Image (cartoon, helix red, strand yellow):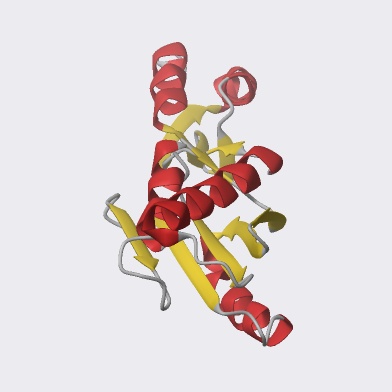
Length: 188
């Protein structure tokens, strides 16, 4: 799965209608929608779609046609996000009507293409579900454990020293956690 960390935009034009797609982290959804409505007061539609993961690790998706014929804009935009395995992202497509009706099939293609183009233009990051866990080790093994943490791309959230050794609070992708636990089992 993939995500984005920055807001990017791209304009797609067909039959004089402009489709300005904005792709951004889902956490910015409300503020970006509000800003776009101020920036584009004459735009006809603000079609949107999003994919995110809740605290129970369930995928939550949504979309809005914002006045376009039902199913011609929001759902195709969401389908492109899903098809590209994007997570924790939102997309808003600002549409300026160019005077020529595109028809339902034309709208589906135009919105899908505008979202595809912004995804191609954007820098995608790997998305993973973060696992939090703890481990402890003796003082004599701290150097070895810290080396394995770096080798397995494990982030140290907290490190506390006790009487016999150290306790670590850690964060990592599930596969990295499992590899670390296998590599470090003799030290922890």
